[in-house]
Amino acid sequence: MMGEEGFLLARRRFLHAAGIAGSLALFAGRAVAQSMPTIRLPFSNGSRPLSDAFPQKGRMILQRARPPLLETPFDVFDKGVFTPNNRFYVRWHLPDIPTSIDPVAFRLTVRGQVRKPLELTLRQLMEDFEPVELAAVNQCSGNSRGFYEPRVPGAQWGNGAMGNALWRGVRLKDVLDRAGVAPGALQVRFDGLDSGLLPATPDFLKSLDVDHARDGEVMLAYAMNGAPLPLLNGFPLRLIVPGWFATYWVKMLNDIEVLDKADDNYWMAKAYRIPDTPGANTTPDATGVKTAPISRMTPRSFITNLREHDVVRVGQDNPVRGIAFGGDTGVARVMWSSDGGTQWREATLEEDKGRYGFRRWHTAYRPQVAGPQKLLVKAINTLGEEQPMVSNWNPGGFMRNVVESVGITAA
Amino acid sequence: MQTNVLLLALVLALPIVPSVASTAKPVAVPGTLTVKLPASNGAFPVGPGSELAGQCLICHSASMVLTQPAMAEDKWVGIIEKMRTVYGAPVPANQVKALAAYLARVNAAQQAK
Image (cartoon, rainbow over all chains, first blue to last red; front, side, top):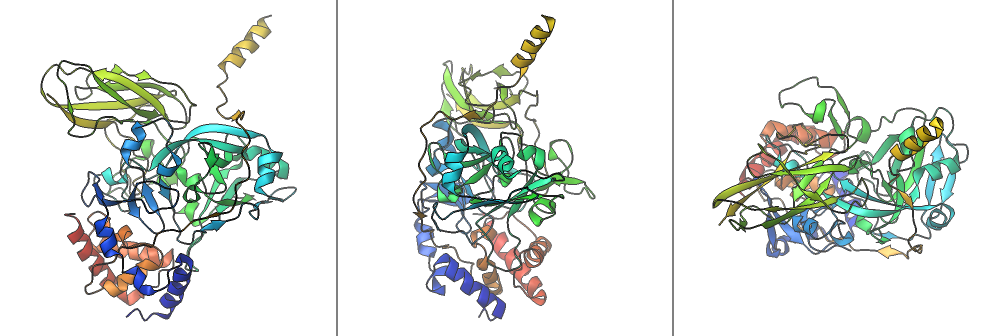
């Protein structure tokens, strides 16, 4: 049936890598999938199974089993400022992911334009460098892609391809200084242990400018929320790029290469490009738009305790709360509106856990009349940047940060 | 004096460094972590062209295809070509159109779900 020799070869490798004994397993799981509970994301073709089957993970929205794309159910964001490790979203590009890692045998290499190449054990990273901690939001470039109109291809995420964690590790700067960055270094490239199964598949590599890599904030994290990283979030070591989209946060990081030229690999030069326009905004029929690699995040905010169609009480104070983040800087203000955005009122910001993390906020809403209502929320960051009332659009479905709303009924 | 005030003002104006030297208890080097990833269970609906779509499963689950928004056949041709040229998907050139027709049909049926 699938007579292609190359395919069979590749498939043997895949079956081997995935640990599947017989090819029938590929097609045998329909009944299992159908018995799973499902959730409906609010766009067409939005039905998704909820899965408890992934290691070190609780219940997650199953976008794709292989390589895993697991979305955090949105109610998790109402429970606290940090996203628990077992509910933190998961996003892999390539199908060959190691499923057993010995941190004693693990090595991080630092090479390229350096005076002294390094090969570091996890113990050396933990003991020979100053440990640092930082709260930061990790958000997929394509978070909320399913909401774009017109729709765009790619992982059809709702709003749950993001999370906030307290990362612990060492400064990338300290590690680079140990190796001694040589004159002429331009970028620093990061590689993890994952790879493709077909020989042609480009390895997943991401790069930062050398000054960014040495800013003292970019981290190599070996722990998240006080525990080792779950395997699917990058065990044993992950790059943390505070304020930047998660595509740069290379998981299972085991190789750092200092380059003397701009990285032209596929994942920098062709993928994860955004229109080089304000808000990464363009139109479906635009041609010849100049592009740039996606980089910093922009502010977002969400109501977490009210969902579409919830009922609130007329003439009474109803608690409204949620989360916000500023992008690559802190949250200055969170504003909310119950009249479609004519008047905005200020919400109360809760404790600041660090400018790159989620900031919880709350307010009280007292509807005066019964009937359908809409609550809007927007964040303004410390640079004065605020969420737009109209969404951006681009063919990659990247960087969505439109003002969010929840439709409720007062009764 | 004035210089000192200026210096003080500068220091106060500096942003708080968000990554701080950790005071938390040191964490130990963790032991070997071994996990089992669940099998990818979804299948492509059987029909003309579904055997070609089986090639997609080399690298990813069927759900990657089945969860996509409505896309016409020419869009699917573009996606298949990207899979062939960038990722090395072993779809022969003379079968691209047949696969695109299958994917467009399955994708259209999926939209009501």
